[in-house]
Structures are given as structure tokens and as C-alpha cells.
Image 1: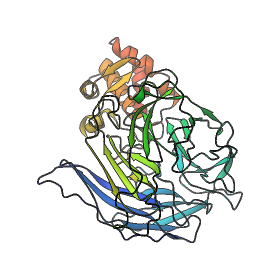
Image 2: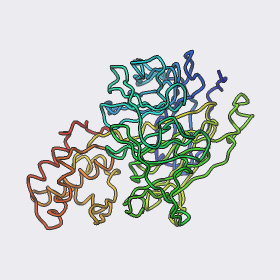
Image 3: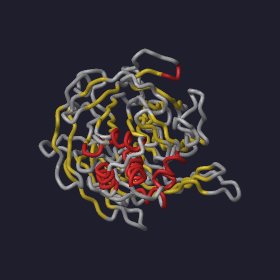
Length: 471
């Protein structure tokens, strides 16, 4: 077992009277136990980001000691963010941790087998295509790389293995396992870059676990060559703020955007629209944690975003990255294409064997907000929208969702609230997605089809099963 450093208080002294922009809790895992015996490996720390700008991280505290810890996410069925799911690596276990309101330690632990049919199952990276399903990715060539274990959520039963087919994730290439999966709506996208190497592929993965590569070109250098085989796709995170996927691995973090997001062309390819490259060594070697044997490597294992232009990243060398890209008009993490560079970017050493991190401010859990909610409580989530070739500023969207009356105004409120909800990760049923284009055409024509309004209002009020957003 790699010795664990004591929790560190990592601070920058904020300027006098600096206003708090963002604060909350981070939950992160460390990978050193890898299949037992159980040891300390799930932690929590508070953070404050202020207008100086400066980031303050508190001392961390222990949430749980499990047989292993890698992938971590919030249970999408708990809109209060009081339940996290942790993959316990090669121990064939996955855990649901109930978080307390005051104490750091989990107040409840539920564990199930990642693979209920064998003793050799794995649960490394995690993904949720919907509220009721958990995908557990093996991420280790031994003993069985060519499968994804699937369990139901909330976590009440063991997982079931599903064989992966297609060009990637089958255990027979130089990239034998899928290492990350992110969903845009109901469509899954995978990556398979090895640890600390920019050698990954990218593509779609179906509900039947079939992989298919998708071409990726690098707009930051005017590239036209497909980059499959040379991508940092070890970690994969959907960024609901930009509509893009944040891919990470080695010392690279790239923003891969589909057509219509982040300024990418609509040509059936994904486009690299921004890149962040960091150093190799952890930022405070030796003097902070002399027991960290991995300080001399870099692998951005995973990132998390908060739907407001802020990113945290976890590096296996112990570092955590914070980026504020909220000022970039195209919602890009860097100004590679001429837009604004990050308002603030900092890299801090946190703990040896750092693996994955989630931000307690992440709102991409499939909840919904009504027009009144966007007007009165969640106005900060009202953003510019582009739909069917039409562009609406944040001010225009706010006016639409705030306008009273029936007819066309009622349709506008319902339609644009639905578009915001979908942008923030609420999965709309076909009854909603099939009428969006016609509803917008009606709205532009000054009509107010009451059938459209009723369907969209129902979705915004949770008819598809989503809870009301609480944050």
C-alpha cells in the first residue's frame, strides 16, 4: 500500500473584500488499495473560489475505506447530492455511500458485486446513461477486459456482465480496455487511452455495447487528419455547459465538440476546439509528500465540470487542476482559437494516488426547472441557446421564459424552459424531442399550439420522471 499523506491545507490568501464566486465540496478517490484489504480511499474537501481570483482548498477528511476506489459519481436518483457511487476496482465491488449533513464519514454503505456471475468482476470508471442504470468499466486487462458490468440504480442488486464488440474495448489491441464513457443525452461515447499515454481512440458505444469510431480533427492547428489512435481519451466527461466532451489523459485535457457546440462545424465529426497542457511532475514534489512515488508522471485521469464554466481535474500524480473558463464566449476551456483564455487556472497538490474527483455543484443529474424557476430562482442558469439555426441571447431567453400570458407566450415559456432543461442533462422522451422543431416554428410564426405547450409544460414539471432541481 502506498502511504497516504496527511490532509493538507492548500490556500492562496484572498484579496481583501474578495467576493465568493463559487464554493462547495469536492469528493475524490485514491487508487492505492486496488482490490483490498480495505483502506482509506474516499475523501471530501471544501473549496472557495473568489473574485481575487483565488482558490482555497480546506484540509480533506475521510468519507470511507473501501476495498478499492476509482470511479465516483452522484447517484442521479438523489437530487440532494447526498449519495455517491464508487467503483471498487478489481475487488468486484461497487459501493453506494450515504453522506451525512455534518460529519465527514459516510453514514451508510451499501455494497454489491460488480459482476454477480463471477468473482473476478471489475468496477473502475463509472457512467450513467439514465437514472436507473450504472455502467462499470473494467479498465484492467486482467482478468476480463472485454465487458461492461451493468447494475440498476439505486444500487440494490449485483451487476451483470455485457460483452463489448466492435473495433475497441475487446481486449485484443494495444488499447485493450475502454477507460472512460460519457453520455450526450442517451448516446454514449467512449475513450480507451492507456495510462499516461496519448494513444486513445474515440467513438460511439450503443446500448448493446457495440463500439464504432468517430473521426476527430484538431481545429486548434487547422487539422483535417483523423486523430484516432493519438487522443488523450483516458478520462471522458460530458460538459453540459459547452455541450462538448472533456477528454483527459497524460498531461493533456482536450475539449471535443460535436457539430453546433463550441463553434464546431456540423460535418459528422468531433472537433478539438481547445486544449490544456500541463507539466509532468506534481507541482510540489518531495517537500509536500515524499512518499508519493508517482510525482514524476502525469495522467489526468478524470475531470468534472459544474455547468457554469468551471472545471476540476484529478491527476494520478496527486495534483488537482481548477480552471475558470466562464468568460470564453464559445464556452471553451482555453483560447486556442482566439477566444478568451481562462479567467483563472491553478494546479495544486492534494494527495498521493489521486484518482477521480466530482464537484458537489455539478447539476447535470437530469432534474428539471419550470419557467417560474428559471425566472425567480435559477436565473443564473439562463444561457444563450442555438436551435434549428436560430441564435438566442441569454437576455432574449430570459425575456421569453419570464413573459406572462397565454398563446404564443405560453408556448415560448414552455419551449425555452424545455430546451434549457435538456441542455442541463434532463433526458427528454420522444414525445418531447419529436415536437421541438415544430414548436419553435410555431413560436417564430407567432402561433401558440396548446398541445405543444401542454406536452412541454408536462416535461418541465417532471412528467418524464425527473425530480425538480434543488440547486
